[in-house]
Image (cartoon, rainbow, N blue to C red; front, top):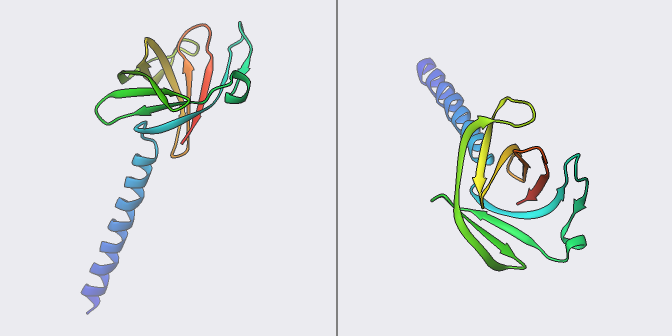
Length: 132
């Protein structure tokens, strides 16, 4: 009986650890629909743009098969490929996850289950913020 009790405790611990790991790994996935919240210009071109100031909504959908679909006011305007790889950031010369799509490369500054922030990997360093 004592062995059975210890075995059940060990099983519970492993299943809990697996559950926590799975949630953490999936919460930072780029694959999803992202709604544009705002863009902020870099030092050489300071600005803030939002759907209200620009006059349109934008969303991007990253798919499992490496495609990114861009919508403007819910009308598809682009369908292209994206790649994610490790690379060097322009400003800090450190290794980051980089995403390339629509002809530009970005540093993935933040990604979690609700937020995505990407920064242009060039001297402009404009920042774009999306929400799920």
